[in-house]
Image 1 (tube, helix red, strand yellow):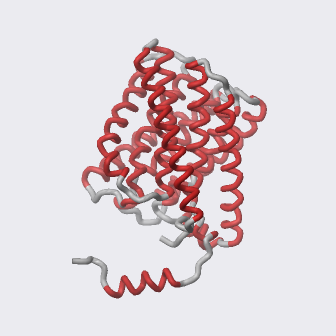
Image 2 (cartoon, one colour; image 1 turned 180 degrees about the vertical axis):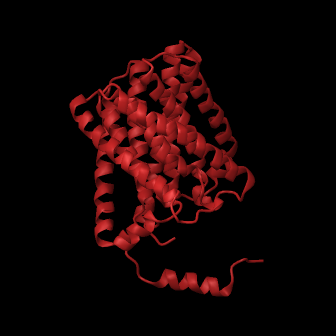
Image 3 (cartoon, helix red, strand yellow; image 1 turned 45 degrees about the vertical axis):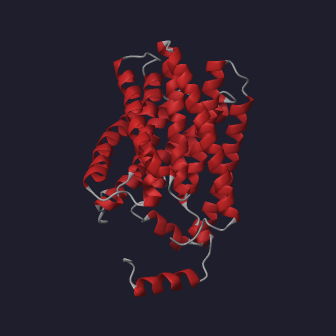
Length: 335
């Protein structure tokens, strides 16, 4: 028996028949693709150091991430200028709001990947990303604790994105000469990760399952401890201490949890939220190769190679599937 009433079906049909601007429905989630490509560049760079490869692959991924960011930023800026109601509607959306810091995270990741190419250019880009990240973090938190009513159905692992963005700051910030700023953002990110982890797990365990489009965001659970591990190594001088071990092995715990949900994720139709798979796997790859280097564990070197291969397959598939979706007009449609 269908749960859709004739009136609802008629309303949906009328909404589909009304002409709409695809620019108005250009989603902020597009920036997740930049995070994925920049994460791939960083993972390739770490693999190049671990396996003695040439650096052409990481450089190619970096410039692909830069090109992707510039293209998406132009369209998103046009949306803000030409479709301000749609832009503000996305900002006030209880789920989509959490994706806005993906913009600043993308800039921070690009800056991190640029360090081997040009430290001076990376520093400028990092400062821009850091300032924007701080602004967006406060804006999102203000929105969360403001007068808007949020319900448990609005919570998803995507709410980790602002926290992850803060933890990304020290990965490049320490080496670029901003240790105190890095400590500030790391502290904020770590505290809010713990708070949000409690909220997200409560929602996943005690309330309705995530809607289909948001199920791929479960993979985001892997990212915070993996990135925190890399940042902590920067802040503590590269010492594999007890806290670093806890962060890395917490990453593996969440990896195991995500793998139990993988069959369900793979059955879902493609959506832009699938790009949520890419950056967490990149963070997992980098942290595994870094841990293997410090602990001198050949098994983890092999595991890092496997994770990198999986990351390459994921990113290649997402690029192909996103391109097909754009050609078929499946993206930038009313929800």
